[in-house]
Length: 496
Image 1 (cartoon, rainbow, N blue to C red):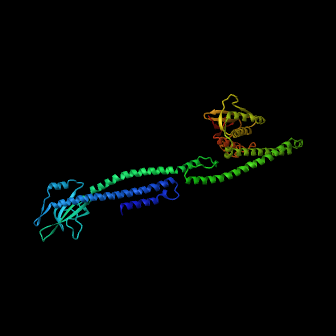
Image 2 (image 1 turned 90 degrees about the vertical axis):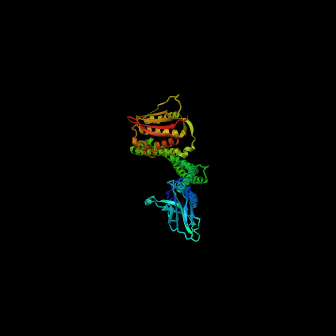
């Protein structure tokens, strides 16, 4: 089997076994790169094999020509003389022929069937020829045995056999002139031609591989952009994906994703509309129930019956709790991403907003026996400009203050503070109540999660705060206060 065929079969076998070329590969870039580069490798191996064969052929031709010339020159030195031969081959010519030990030239003059006359008697025998043509060179490859008998020192040689006629008329005889040359120089010449050809070809292959790699990366760049667009999205962001400048295949994928996102968005909006409509429908009867219980509790008949008064009081508390839950659900619906995006984002003074919220909640705090105040009440305090929806941020701050009033307990104090901290505007609501265990600081930001069963809360206040603050690119966290108490901090980026 030739070298080229062997290389092609080996490479094709490797192509079939490579996992990156099988259907369902994880990396499309690697898949394309292998399918484009491996054929180049096959072509490179085939070209190298063809170049070596071609170089070997031309090297053989050059050596064959030199051997033929040497054999004819040697034949001219053997001249018939009567019934014998006159050999005019001076010692100096013999030394010149055998001067190079790495590329020695061997010769032998004999008369078939093997009568040695002159030269090296270890010369390989000529292949059998029925009736050789006189003066025609016969070239063949053979192995020259070493005089020491060590087969490891035997050499591969190229031999030319030249048959000549001599003798008296009527008694013709054959003269065989053989000249052999080591194949060392021929192989060196072939290798040198291969190296001189393969190096530039390898450079071209490397350059082509770099170009192919760059082309694949450029061609798959829209897919990378689509991936980054999807990865950078919030879990609740169902807006359509925009890739107008992408190739047709990527646009088709984006269109399919947008269709799926649209269906999901419809389902989510239907659920939110149901929650909002249900909450709106519940507010009116709950408000009526609350008012009726208040009127009933104030009547003299109920006041005269302690058992009935206790039952009506529990009904009133349940109505109050249900009304608060409905209000929180509506606030949560307004804080959802789609609803938040519908509101206008403006610049406003967070310090002034915190001061207003604290002032509005003072009557509730006084009714609960709590001291509520603002740390920074100076009118000339520098403004803290932030970007966002002022109505939603107000809702978040109201929830923080409301939570503090509900759970701090009678006799506690609550302080609302607004200040700048580097690139952030920070609003803190600190109370001196019993506080919350640090293990629950993250958990109570989840919906319907509560740190205590006391009070009439529904577990949505802090979830609403977190939703609003994060949609405004801010952060909210809780911190325990020593010796007891809790501080809730809202951080929003300051607008220059």
